[in-house]
Image 1 (tube, helix red, strand yellow):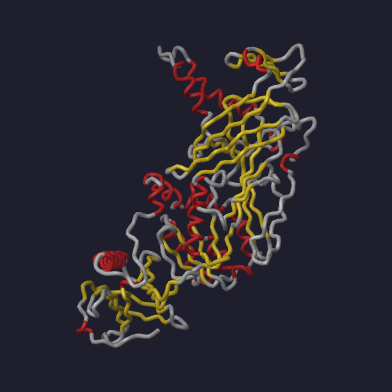
Image 2: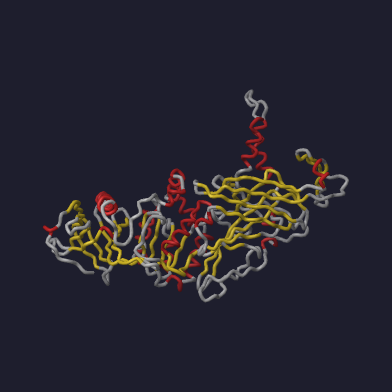
Length: 568
C-alpha cells in the first residue's frame, strides 16, 4: 500500500486519537504497524480527511478522503476503515483499507463519534460526493418494524441461552453443517456473508469449508459473543470478520459469492427475517451467487383432532361461572372463547391426524421480491381421505440447500425428527364435517405487521351431504339442525338451510402468528383410520422445479406435496 510524506505542520487537525495498531489489509501479505499511532481528522488538503501516522516522526501517513470513506465497528475496540475505489453495476471495489485496534472501548467510541460528526457536517451538509450520496434517511428496517418489537427481538437473540437452544436443535444445526461441508466446492475460495450470524456458528462452518473470507453480520449484542467465539478458533477466525449492525444498514468492503443464513421462523415467515435475507441478496450477492438455503416451502393439510379442540374450548369454561365471588362472568365467555381460538397452536402432532394430502406454497429465495412477503395469499383445495370433523389447518415447512454437489433438505414435517420450530396448527372455533372423497376449499391469507409477524386469516369450506342413519348425533348450528353419523361419516342438514338444497359449511378464524399457544406435549397415540395407512398423507406427487443453475440441470429430486404448488 502506498503512503505519502507530508510535514505534519501542513495539517489542521480537529480531532486527534491514539490507536494501538493499524493493519494494512491491502498489502500482500497484510502489514501490521504497531503503535501507539495517531489518527487525525482534518481538512488541511482542502477536503475532509482522516490520516493515520505510521511512524512516530510523522513523515509517513496513510490518507483517507472522508467523502468516499466508510468505517465499520468490528468489536468493542476494533474497526475497519475502507476507501471506495469504484462502484459499478456488478460490484463496488475499494482502493485501500485498514483495520484499527484501540486500547480502550471509550477511545473507539469517541473515534466513531468524531467520524460521524465529520461525515455529517463536512461531507453530507457541506459538499457533493464524487461517487454518489450518503443516505441520511431512516433505516428501511426501522421504517416497517415498530421500535418496541425490534428491541425485544434483538434482546432475545442477544442472549446465549436462546442461542444454545438453537444450537442444540441437532436437526437444524446438523443439516446446516452437512449442507455446507458436503458442498465445499461452493465455499472454497469464495466470499461469504452470514446474514443474522447470531453465535457465528454458520460463519465457522463456512470457514471450515474453505471460504476465502466470511462477513458475519449480526445486529444484536450476540455480535460481541460471536467475536469471542470466533477469536477462540483462530485458525478459522482469521478469515471471519464480525460486523455489528443490520443488513439493511451496513456496508461491506466487497460483494459476496454466497449468502448463508438461518432466517426461518414459525411457519417459515414469522419474525420477518426472510425479508432481511432478500435485502441482503439484493445488496451484497454477486449475480448468480448462491443462497443457503435456496428455496422454502410451506406445507398445509386439514386435520382432525378432537382432543385439541376440546382442550382449547375448555379454557373458556372459567368465564361461564355465574357466581364468581358474587360476579357473573358469562358476559365475557364468547369473547374469551374466540380469543383462545385466535392463537395458532405450536406443537408436534401425529401425522395420522391429517385427513387429506398436503399442498405446498413455494418461495424461491433467489427470485422472490421483498414486497411479495408483505402479503401471502394461498388458495386451499383438498380432497378428504376419510369422513370426519375437520378442526383446522396443519402447517409445517422445509427448506432446500441447493448445493452444486449435494442438494439437502431441512424439514419440520410431522413424523420427522422434531425441531425447535415444531409444527403449527390453526384451529377453527366451528369445525366442518366432510365425508371421504369430498372437496375442501378455502384460503390462507397472511398479512405482515409491524410487530415482526403476521396476521393469519383462514377460511375453510365444505358441502354437507345426506345420511340415512336413523340414530344420528344431533347438533344445533344457529337456526339449523345438523345430524352427524358416526357410522357412515356423512352429515345431513334440515331447517332453513335445507330448503336451499343443502348448505355450504364455511368456518373462518383470525389468528396472530406473534402470539401462539405453545403446546409442547408429545403426540398422543391415535388409531389409524380404516382406509388410511401411517404417513400416507405426507406422500405426494413429484414436481420438478426449474433449475436455479445456469446450465439448466435439474436440482430438485425431492418430491413436493402438490403438483400445483406456486413458485414466487
